[in-house]
Image (cartoon, rainbow, N blue to C red; front, side, top):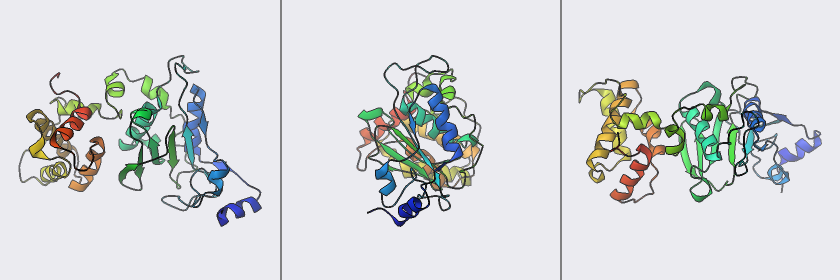
Length: 288
């Protein structure tokens, strides 16, 4: 049975409007050649509770969803070998598109501020699907929403112009160091990888009583089983700790929340599985 909001919308003449940041990003992807959907089908419209593909969503955040705005988009995969209509280059995979948007959101890039959550598959159809959300802090859970990238926008930014001109494809193609996109699964870890290899680490306090150092060490303890890590990986974690403590006054929980999503291990993983997961994120520590 459909919600009362659906029946009210029908009685109101079925009006639709669309979040400006969502369409700014989506229409640019369309210009490159991707298929992007905004409006939900009838099953979306009658779903209880109604969600962001409808003009009467009950899941708005951080405020009630603005009626009658649609606040979401689905980005569909390009055809094999499909090229951009703008520059003629092969279109990036959905994993790279989502990784760029997610990375920009994590890095507080102004144009990505509209993102509420993303459903995506970092390794494509052969790997896991995740629901990454910022409401307001970062959290991750598994998702069954596969085969496309779903992006939902914040309810307080539906008329914002901040994402006008935001071109995810151009950002990916303009990266001269392909390692940051192709060899790091989630696309936003190259700087962390370099830091783990001992390069480009800002000088930070080494005082064991320094509160930022203690917070960083506590955060790392929340994520890693120290006893199960090989020496090079221990050094990598220490390098990450130095980087974090030298740049932020974040609490241990905030640092842990920032780092934990980068390490994908199941509950009860063995030390060897933890090590493999860390190596997967940081890259080989022997080829620096």
